[in-house]
Image (tube, rainbow, N blue to C red; front, side):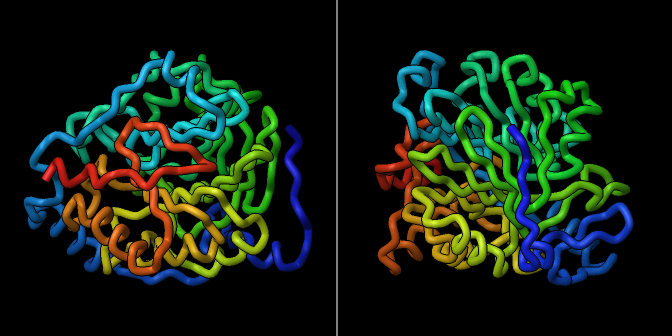
Length: 340
C-alpha cells in the first residue's frame, strides 16, 4: 500500500501550483469576476429552460448484491452521475459515491436526482475502495461516505480530501491521500492520481484548499481512466502517453457551459480527451442524474453519440444499473430517448 512518486523534472513542472494553503491549476484560469459569477447564478436560478430535467422517468436497471457477486470480473455498473461501481479481481470499487437525494449541502434545496440509485448502500457488497476525485457536492456526499465507512476498507483521495473524511470520523488508517502522479497499490489494483483542470471547495471560504484529480485504475487485466471533473487541457495527452492505452475511459460529458470553459468540457472536448488518453471505448459520465447546467438534460448523450459516430469511435452508453464489460463493452441503446 506504499505511495510512490517519480521525481523527474517534467512531473514536478506538471504538479499543481500552490499559493499559501491553496491549490492552483498549472495553467492560469479564465476569471469570470464577481458580476459575471452573479449573472451565471441568477440565470441558473431564474432563467432555466424547461428541458434541463426529463419529462418522463429515467429507466433504471435495479441491482441486487447477489447480481453483483455473480457478475464477472472487469465489470462496471453506472449508478448515476459520476458514481460507478467496478468489479476488479473479485473486489468492488466505487468512484465518487453520491446517493443522497440532492447534490447540495442541505437536503431541502439544491439539484435533485432525476432517478434513484439502482441499489442502496445497505444492499451493496463489501467495498474494497472508494476513489474520490474532489470535494464538490455532486462528487463527495457526506451521508454516503458515513454510511459506506463500515463496509469500505480504503478511501483513496487527492490531497486534503482525506483530511475532510477524517474530520467526519473516517478512521485515518483507512485513508490514503495522493498528489498528482503519485500511486498506490491496494488489493492488487494500482491507482494513480493524475492531473485534472478544475477547482475545489464546499463553502464560500474554502475554495481550492483541497486538490482535485483524475485517476488511473489498473488491475493488470484491465486499465480504466476516471476523469472526475476537468476542463480540456494538455494533461490528457500526457496521461495517455504515460499510462495508456485504456480499455475504458470514463470521461465527464455534461454540466458544461460556454461561460465556464476551464472546468468542464464540451462533448467535442470530452471526445478529444478520450483520443488523447488513447482510450479504446468511451463511457460518458457526469450526466443523466442532476440538473447542473442550462443545457437540455439529454443533450450530452445526443452530442457525444453523434460525434463518436462521425469519428467511428466506440461509445458505451449503458442504462443506469446495467452491467458493462470493461474488456468487451457493448455499445448500449439510446435509453435517454425513452425519458423525453
